[in-house]
Length: 378
Ligand SMILES: Nc1ncnc2c1ncn2[C@@H]1O[C@H](COP(=O)(O)OP(=O)(O)OP(=O)(O)O)[C@@H](O)[C@H]1O
Ligand SMILES: [Mg+2]
Image (cartoon, rainbow, N blue to C red):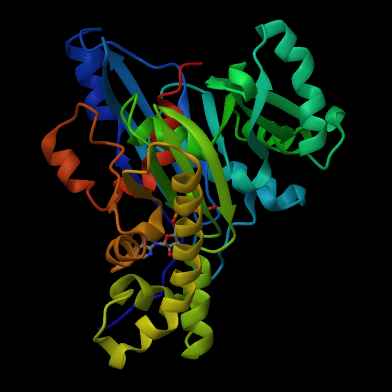
């Protein structure tokens, strides 16, 4: 098997043009209007963009694409970098991707990783919305290591629970995002000539893209390049999140270090063989297994924690992100957790040409966050 050098590349997966011409050229507004925002998922390895449009309660994809960093030069310093030059080059990539995919709006919803924010579910006495708005900053102060003046707070009331003595309490999902991080998102969009319409967490976007409303407790796991994000969605709401700094890049590095291979070659071996038994006398599997077991171990802890503390156990696990495609991953996790594990498809609920859908079958998991962001109503 020959492996070429992997270079950075941009791919247009769903181009605006053919569908747009049907939309506006031939049938006017018959298929509905494009949603006025696009979703942008700036990963450490891949940047993904997506725009959808609505027709009644149906959603159709309009444009989608991705830019994958060259493995040798990866990860993209992107939003983690403090250097102005890195932000400028990131903005250049985003601008090109936006134009290549013919996205028809400049307003973008950006995804933010769990590792960049602070979030927790807390219980509060039952109170009115205005009282909650006054009380939550006090709670947030206990939860985050930054002064409140340096974060943006947001929250969602998840529901009511019976407290001690039957006194009703409410469960609130509290999120604090550092202002400095938000400003960086604003800056990169400005540099790209675009507008930041909203920011939401990657897991919130994934849950919108992958799960039906009111689903039974389900675990969603985004296995990316630098991190694995684990969330639990109950009755359509994200109620638990965790992020661990182990994902695809760690797997590639493990092969590169243990088998003395160039990073680019290690990446190719990882994707080709993953956890399969036979190739190279099982050497790739042997190197990858301990790293995958770290990830599986964390997912298992979250699974057990939930099942020990909540009435309704987790029914299944839905995976997304590039590393979910590692050969053998679904089988490993099914065995570790003892429940159904599958790779989610954010395009499953979208109305689209079946040929196009079939052509995207191996890419769709990568688009999960971008699809979810693009469906956000701003
Ligand atoms: N078929 C495959 N098998 C195994 N790994 C894969 C496959 N395709 C992509 N990957 C890995 O997936 C990762 C990229 O996935 P993804 O785009 O979800 O990450 P990211 O969003 O850029 O990263 P992060 O979310 O951590 O910032 C890379 O580590 C890449 O090597
Ligand atoms: Mg990602």
